[in-house]
Structures are given as structure tokens and as C-alpha cells.
Image (cartoon, rainbow, N blue to C red; front, side, top):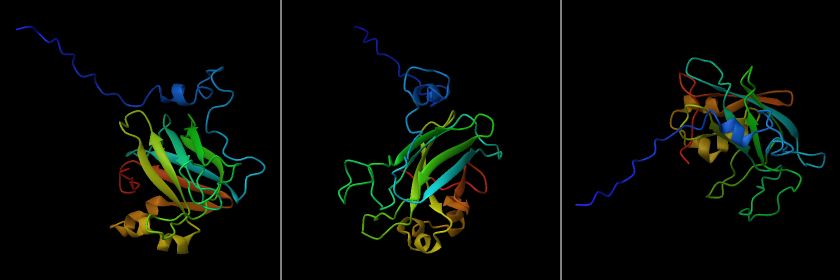
Length: 203
């Protein structure tokens, strides 16, 4: 019998430590790829809506912020429209990207996004969802990117009506998705493990 010489399966690998080199080269002091790293600028002086700053950290099971993680966010504009070819409800604000990318600060593990507060968008059954921002998290040791949402602590009525939050079985975990406000800054800590583990979405 002739040997087929089958190749062995290539071992899997996590996103790090090279994720920053590929996605944020300027952050890694690699020039000449992009003038600025993609996703760093979401708004300009013509963007409609309430300007806000979102600060976040990704915290491991020991309570330590991860300093080698990276976050991408997606959100609707101030009128609840997405900057996407699949948006069929109208035209989104052309001066708002609706998408951002940020690596963690190497000293503090903090992410900072300059954006606007999103409008409400409909759930698939037509009910309005509360204003929210979708987060995607990658880091060394995370095999698949994690998805979660950030809701706004000053939107109590909308949060109470939100069809996604209503589906959370253990209501004591809902606060893990709520950002606290101080002036125009919203702070959102994402806990990977432990008593305050953030709710992650299987999408």
C-alpha cells in the first residue's frame, strides 16, 4: 500500500502577542503602514450627537487589568442608524464612523474612545433597544474574541425596557453591562472571571 503522507493538523494559536503589530502598527512604533491606526478617530467637528468619552479596562480573574488586550467597538449614530451597507432604515451620519479600535494603555490597561452617545435601534421584533455600544475583546490567552455590550447608567427607563437585558435570567448580573457616568465620561470595566464576571454574548 502506498503511504498517503497526510499532513498533521496545524496547532491553534491565540491572538497575541502579535495582534497589536497587525492592527495598530503606529501604537507599536511601526511607521509607514497607515498615517494613523485604523479606528482611532470616530468623530469629527461635524458629527451629530452628544459627545462622550468611554473609558474601559479588561480585568482578569485576579483583579489585574490586562495591558496587552485590544478592543473594537461598534455602535449606531445619534439617530440610531448604523454606518453599514446593510442599514436599510435610512442614511447614517457620514461624519461618524460607528466603529473604533483601541489598544490598552501599556501602563494602566485603560482604553479611551472619543465618540457620541448612540440612539436607540430596533430589536428584531421591532421593540426599541436601549442605547448601547458593542465591544469585541482580544488578548493573549483569549482563543476567540469575546463580545459584550455596554449600556448607559443614566438610561434607566430605556434599560428596563431593553429586550436583551430582559432576557438575562440572573438579574444580579445585569449591572456588569452598565457603565457609570461622571460628567461626559462613561467608565466600563470588563471582568473576564470572578464574582463580577461580565456577561458575554455568543454571536
